[in-house]
Image (cartoon, rainbow, N blue to C red; front, side, top):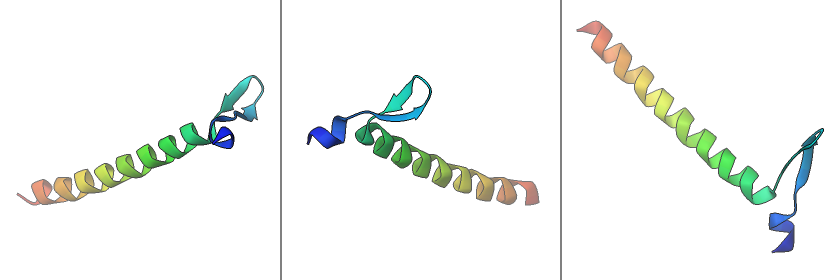
Length: 48
């Protein structure tokens, strides 16, 4: 449990916890899926 919230250094004066990192990865996946849906919608509307 402690490991989940222990900060990890990324760059100078920047850190993130593993829990935050996992949340960011989940958000990235969701945004990528949304982008794919929007791309498909654009091709459908471009044909009209």
